[in-house]
Length: 159
Image 1 (cartoon, rainbow, N blue to C red):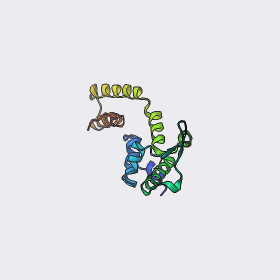
Image 2: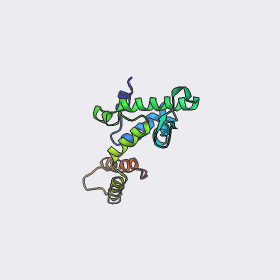
Image 3: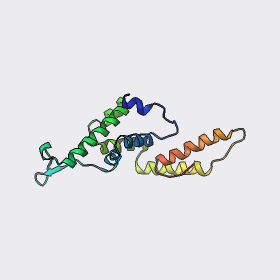
Image 4: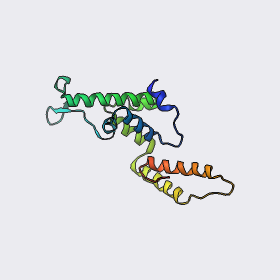
C-alpha cells in the first residue's frame, strides 16, 4: 500500500496531523523523528572565511551515510503525504528538519501565533460546560477536540 494512502486512511479527525505523522515516522524507524525534529546535519567544509561547501560523498563516514539515508526516507514519506501545493512550498530544502519546520510554521504559525492559539484553547478548556440537550458523547467529542488541539500546540492535557 502506498505510504500516502496508508497515512491518510482511517485517521481520527480529532487527532492533529502532526501527531499522526510523528507516530507513523517513528513506526518506520525509531531514529526518523529525531532526524526530523533535531538534526540539521548536512556536513560542510569551510573553504575560507565567507564560503563553505557540502562534504563530498567519498568523505562521508558510515554514521553520516546512515543519517543521510534516514533523512532521505523521512523526506520521501513527508513528500508522499503532502499535497502538491505544500510539496512545492518545501521541495527546495535538503534536510527533513527544514521541511518540517517550514510546514509547522505554516500550519501552526510563529511562536507568537502559537501562544495566542494556546491562550484561546486554555480559555475554551476552562469555560467548557455541558449545554442543555447535549448528550455526554457529543460533549466528550467536543472536549476531546479541545484537548487534542492543545496537545498539538505543546500544551498537555489528558482526557
